[in-house]
Image 1: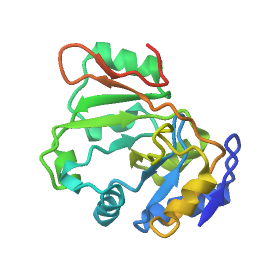
Image 2 (image 1 turned 180 degrees about the vertical axis):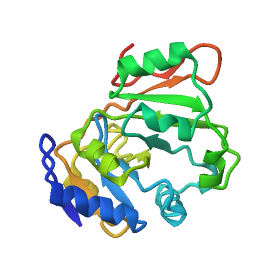
Image 3 (image 1 turned 135 degrees about the vertical axis):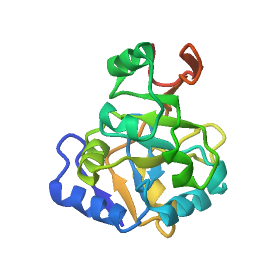
Image 4 (image 1 turned 90 degrees about the vertical axis):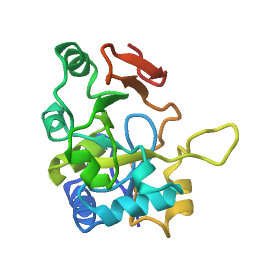
Length: 202
């Protein structure tokens, strides 16, 4: 299903359709504040396996990020964060940043893996924010890549739908996506280190 949702004022009926799909173990492609991404409810193991399969990777090797509604959801999945990192996150989120944090014991269980770190995002996008808020827990996220040698990410939701319509349950059309990924900041050591320069500047 290709579902058009207004980026500024997401209609509640459409948001509910997506939330119900995720609760039923569905896989969805959605806009963020950077590029289009694919994901599912973090508590639906079969859906996580499906996303990994679509991406052509093994679930236990997947580096999916968690998209959260706000910072209050972090403590369920990460080890305690030091004050400097927390201040940095508070200052830059919601925004185009992925923070790599030390995962707590809940995360390996979700992925049946030995994962020790976790990417956390709080995207500045009304559609996905509202979906996560209504779902009540984070969703997994992985970028939609393009096979074009020049363009790294597919930005047109209709083209994304053409390619993925038989693989996922819903493709959300929230307008044209960006082509710059998030800036990745590794906060697992003593200091925060930028490991990929993306849309966000520090």
